[in-house]
Length: 469
Image (tube, rainbow, N blue to C red):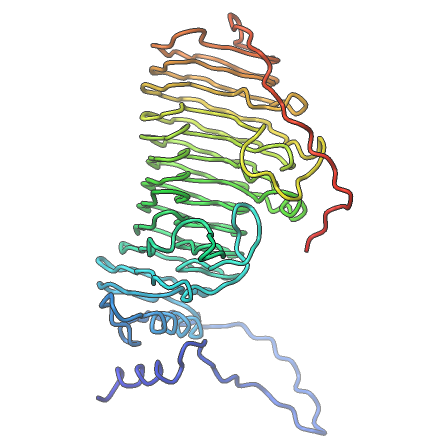
């Protein structure tokens, strides 16, 4: 065999599993000579952008032989050439974990399927986020560390190995691999492909900034199978996605306990639009309960909720988290198929209490400025369950307006200041439309009074102050 194919196959054989080594050419001074005078230049030609096909570097795509090395080497070679696209053509590509690189876009062509290996050993162990804490665990099937200008586009498919999903256990005590997991990355694209992975997260964004997620079809059912986790990220746009999951379709969070409170990596500026959600175990959109780094400026609009085991939107935290949840805006939503209802606040007792919680009133999350408008509900069991709010940190600013449809029960609120209830025109409910305890604002005329919610014991300060370790 001669020509191009031989050269690249020889490259694959020689390179092995490591990153391709590239010689560096530099100016070397000689003894006794003055240093060369610095010359300022401007590039006149843009860097080359290459397109590389994984088949040309040895990938078979037969679903039997692992293509990990071939795919990784293609990505690495694209990176050392300055970036471009790595193309995965039609076929079934069995792989272990693959690392994305800066300036490299992974393109899955029609009928291209990446299939995760069934071996935990094929997923490197490193620091990963799990239930709001940094721990040792297996990284995702496709991951990136401190990369920029990278991502994945379709129309192909990414499938995790279902046997690897689930929670850590005695046999496999480390966190199990997510499907796609960029960490500390910037300027990311995830567009026009589909995923399939049970009992674990499909897209786990951690410490990332400037992310676009568009037109994904996500299927993740049967346990802790979040669709998209926005975990301490900034400027995230999620648009046009079809998500059906076990756990939350989308979860916005920022860590838990004193560790995350010290780091204060806030999730903020998250925009979710034109999506369809169905959930079979928990909520469609969950904000929290891991909120110790703070959450702010989340906007959800023009979305359809067609099934929720609990509530379509669930805002949750607990004393011991600290920080804040603020500026949450949801409008132009259609909701049906809910077992719990449309909206719930639980800032009193949601999620696992941390080993090192934030003590006292400082540990009670501050919540403010929640607005919900243009909401249409069909056969909704409960319109709003809003009583799970701490009396010492009431919700400052809550608006519910322009709500239509049918529901079995109305609105219950406790410990809210500056509430605005306006144009709620629902039918079919029994009992009062509005029930309150310690609520001030407008639109409260005719509300019945309910008992104050029960509050647990205060979180006490530890004997020694917490230190990151």
